[in-house]
Length: 207
Image (cartoon, rainbow, N blue to C red; front, side):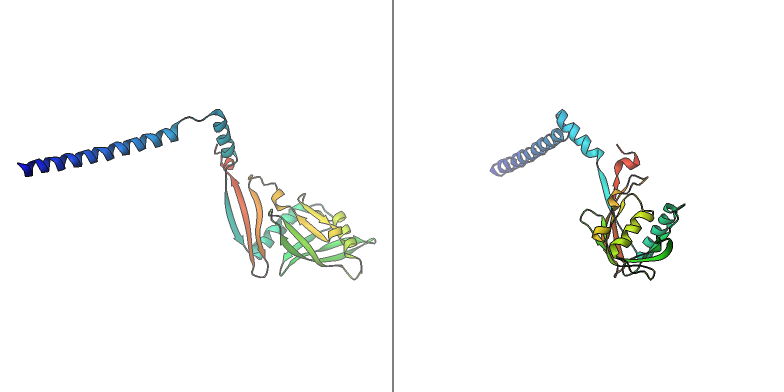
């Protein structure tokens, strides 16, 4: 009899533990459910909606100088339609701008070598290394003044003769797709160019 009673006590003990654990699990499930679905205040809801409207995903795209060169010059061809003075860009060990300028009532060939410097905000500064207009000997700043006056540039490009530089506001480019582009890395020697593309969810009609 004693053995039977002991077995019954052990059986009741395990039942008690089982139901205790089951009750604990049910309680935890109820608590988590309440936390997830409990309606927040109006301020919380507005904040969440604002965050969702600005939500986006970032992608990093790696390309080569050759690919980017084709893209840039295709863009410049469209931009310079109807312009009297043409130029193109060649990406080599540095950035080369090749074209023509009207100087002293004549047109002379233009050749500029620029070093690309990536900025923290994703824009680029092209710092002048050397520049020439044919066989004429003119100060760099004067030549860049001619460039600023006669060459057709996108709105997001600024020629700064006083700094002997060209500022490329890449992050200010307006894209029909509503994407946002920033430069992540430019390594001309290693032929490694990386761009960051920010894709807002609203571009796909996701509310």
